[in-house]
Length: 145
Image 1 (cartoon, rainbow, N blue to C red):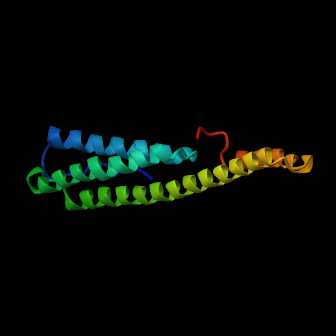
Image 2 (cartoon, rainbow, N blue to C red; image 1 turned 60 degrees about the horizontal axis):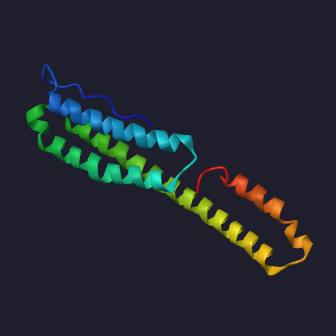
Image 3 (cartoon, one colour; image 1 turned 180 degrees about the horizontal axis):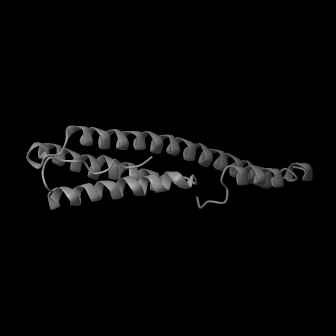
């Protein structure tokens, strides 16, 4: 997914204020998109990018929209940017759900291991530990929790 290109306007140039705002929007978009493209989701980073879009990006878009007629910014470009951020928010929410699911699985497995170790169960139960670690690895056990 990519950020919409700068609009073609009837004006000879785009104002420095608009260009700066558009660059900030593009930076917010690309940073969040980069985190999503890595596939190794961290809840804290996902929440950070979700909040950045909700507070910074959308407030900038409101300001751009307010001056769009004066600046000669096409409404279509603003709609395209809003749609791009909307799609990005959906992907972030999906990634957060996935990351939360992985966290819950890891937490349940770790609690199970602690239960086995503290319960004085026979050695056969302790043999389950390697398979639990394999499951942890398959759900992202290599990431920092």
